[in-house]
Length: 173
Ligand code: HEC
Ligand code: HEC
Ligand code: HEC
Ligand code: HEC
Image (cartoon, rainbow, N blue to C red; front, side):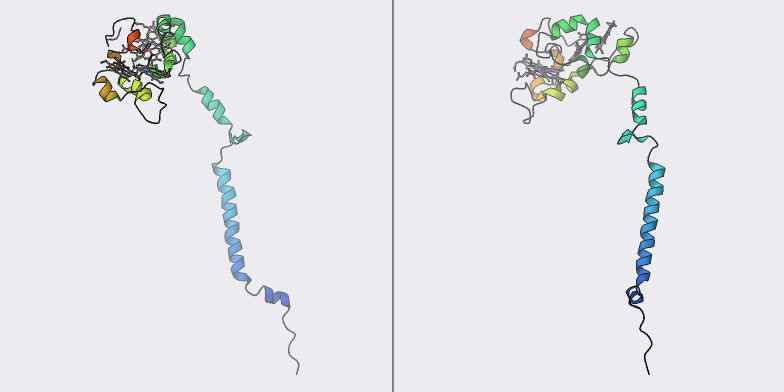
């Protein structure tokens, strides 16, 4: 008696195919989900100009301008400029300390900038820190100022004590 013809080799090869099909189905679902989600969440203008949202340019450009730029300030406050250029703060621009003041520059009569709190702004640059270059003037502000506002003694626009053109008062002028 002859045995039945053996099952073809191919069939043998695919006898455990079922678990592979399941895996393939899961991966297909994942790929479809990725494509659908990506289409849903990536903004339309992404890639318009490069690897960023094209609309972002128009949105940023539409925001109101906050900084006037020091040239604008200097046009009116020439007295401050004359003081400042004589000291080591010559290279610091107005809005570094005064904050963005475009609204004041556009309408100085009705918008008056608040005067900066020297305890905060001076310390931001001058608080002693061993990471700063030694040549940079720095103080441990609590010890140095004895709790007084920095502008009690220093004129912010020309801070060297020996340079004080006018007596330090600390009072706003
Ligand atoms: C068009 C002229 C003009 C421009 C530009 C201008 N200012 Fe003024 N600023 C004035 C006038 C006028 C006053 C009001 C003086 C007053 O009322 O005693 C003033 C007052 C100030 C004061 C004092 C506020 C106070 O309480 O005493 C500061 C600080 C100031 N400006 C900073 C700036 C800065 C920083 C800029 C640049 C971003 C700037 N200004 C641009 C005209 C100008
Ligand atoms: C290092 C920080 C700093 C810079 C830079 C600076 N200011 Fe000031 N400014 C101050 C501080 C602090 C006061 C407040 C002084 C006070 O209360 O006596 C002040 C006060 C003023 C005042 C009020 C009047 C006065 O003289 O006290 C004006 C106006 C002014 N600044 C304009 C300017 C302009 C314009 C520039 C740029 C050319 C500028 N400031 C740059 C810190 C600075
Ligand atoms: C944005 C940083 C910055 C702020 C804010 C700032 N300074 Fe300065 N300060 C400097 C720089 C930069 C120098 C010059 C350093 C140099 O020339 O190497 C300087 C120099 C000085 C000097 C040395 C002056 C000299 O001629 O020896 C004093 C004092 C001083 N600042 C005090 C102050 C006071 C007081 C304030 C607050 C009203 C202040 N600084 C705010 C950056 C700052
Ligand atoms: C009671 C007056 C007084 C007060 C308040 C004061 N200083 Fe001074 N400061 C001085 C004198 C005086 C000098 C110069 C003598 C010296 O070099 O120690 C000086 C020097 C400095 C120097 C230069 C240091 C150097 O190594 O060249 C810096 C920076 C400085 N002060 C920052 C500040 C800051 C920031 C504040 C506020 C937290 C402040 N000062 C408050 C009197 C004062």
